[in-house]
Amino acid sequence: MFDPEDFKYVKFLVEIGLTHYLVVATLLFSMGIFVMTTKRNAIGVLLGVEMVLNGAAINLVAFNRYHGLATVDGQVVTLFIIVLAAAEAALAVAICMNYYKNLSTIDVDRGDTLAG
Amino acid sequence: MRTAVILGICVIVLATAAMAFAQPVPAEQLQVTEQAAPQQPWSQALEAIFFYVISAAVLLSALGICISRNIVRMAVYLFFTLGGVAALYFLLLANFIAVIQLIVYAGGTLILLIFGVMLTSKSPWARFDVKKKEMIAAGIVCAVFAAVLLAVITTATWPVQSQPEVHAVSVANFGMELLTTYLVPFEAVSVLLLAVMIGAAYLARQE
Image 1 (cartoon, helix red, strand yellow):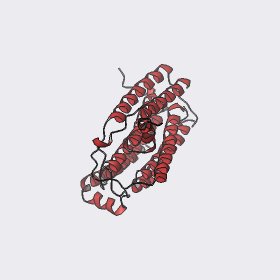
Image 2 (cartoon, helix red, strand yellow):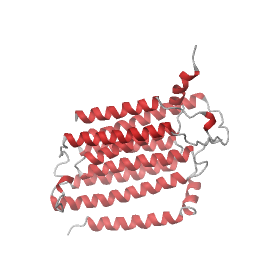
Image 3 (cartoon, rainbow over the protein chains, first blue to last red):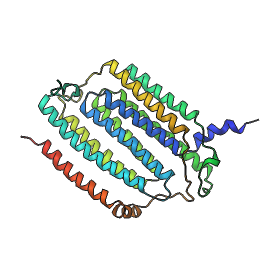
Image 4 (cartoon, rainbow over the protein chains, first blue to last red):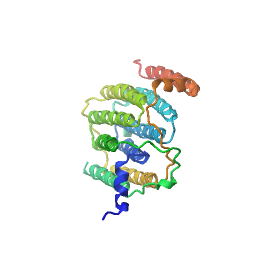
């Protein structure tokens, strides 16, 4: 008949645990790095940074849910991440506007004025 | 474009394979402090369905950001990614963080980025083509990075503590913790936010 070993994987797929969230966070993080490295639009690079920050934040909340018993430590740190991401986005958009004012383009590859 | 699509599909296939062949942690290795209350089977199935649907939305829209060359489309895909992450927070019983994520990230930061797009582009449909070689190199690096991390995550033994009764943390608890244990980081981050906003206004001013 059925071997219980065969159902191990099915059980793992159905019972959502810490590992599942970590896998999603890892994929989001890696795709964020891909976006950061391949986009030539400075705003596109910023979008990649936001993806990376979100991937890290999922990790924190997932560990808080499955590892921290009745604490909010991971959620508080996630709140700080959201605040820092907002600050970073505001500053980076201001820098992008200056970049555009000086070089008349938003292409990051053109910002090589200081290159030797 | 085609390379990016193929690379993205490879990453997803790799992740699915890693999850399918992951070794579930044996029960005796878990440091279970207290037996969890037996869950209703249908609620567990519902959680699994919600998790997979939301994760698919998050990862597919993230893939859309990877392969899209249009900055406006990328911003719209990012909106779905952020909203999906907020839904994952709801699944993780972090209600307050989920709401903050929706308000600050999807409502504030993303709008700021879209304004940045509008202010820094001669035409919102301007596109910058990336060299295929760079795309392939970045894809390989990121795929290897993801594969190594996934291998570690799926084989590691996490000391999971099962909670006797699972309930969301109330906002009152959250605020109490924020103003007692985390008072110094809280004040530091608020001063930092103020300084950054003044700096951004100074940087973006018209001469």
